Length: 323
Image (cartoon, rainbow, N blue to C red; front, side, top):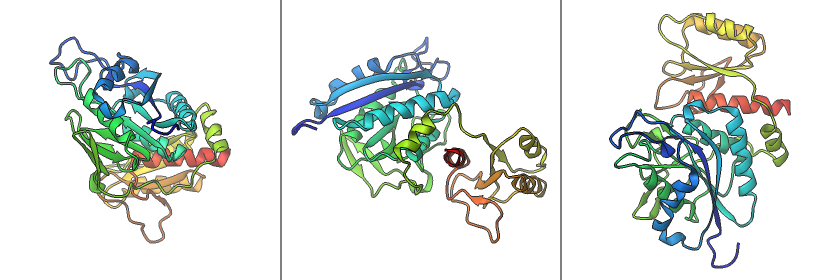
């Protein structure tokens, strides 16, 4: 990177509410996601990024979808473009515009697979771009602010003025502007008047860093090994688990009650699944806290991951074992 230059910031678009349109500026829920291109989104905020005047901007439209429909084809394409740009010496950071519904899953997928040292910042919106007081432009501007901070690194999520680590971030409200949070961990920073105020060290996932060759093998796959989530609840039984095993599932994450406790009937089915070679991870359906290991537990602990993130880690582990 040339001396005195802020370098290149690449902005990748995947759609979502931040790129959504509605027929009425007062309509915040009856919109269509993924309608506005990422170049137009960036053009609306770069004039405000005074500190970034010497940044070279690059935009790419990787996808244009509602994030509830996220699939491996988009993840694969997104990971490939992120890996490509982050490897360029002149690239300072990558920003990804994304829908909120599966943002936490995409962020964790990218953090686990790529584990970048440079900032890879995802941002989003809870209101469409056509809303009278759309939140997307400010979120994108804040994301740009974070990428230009020398202390930023790894996969981060920026929304509603808060900066979250990929491992902890989650969506916990269906329509509030501050829908994203990090539970007990809290945000790692906030953006205030164009400056980032950090609270401490960013918590990264302890998984071993993938080699470039291993990353390429994942990106070249048609899909990931099948892993499903099952929920323990009152009146649960094991028929769903038995059916999934018969259908060839490779792994199961059980979202248990409390400290990952599981209904007796479901537990018996999970033990049958494990005996047939299916990997079983124990997580909790509780929003706060984490599952503590149980004595002589036959199942793997989720190590503080939510069920959806434990599923991603298990899929990647199974794929890695096949490589």
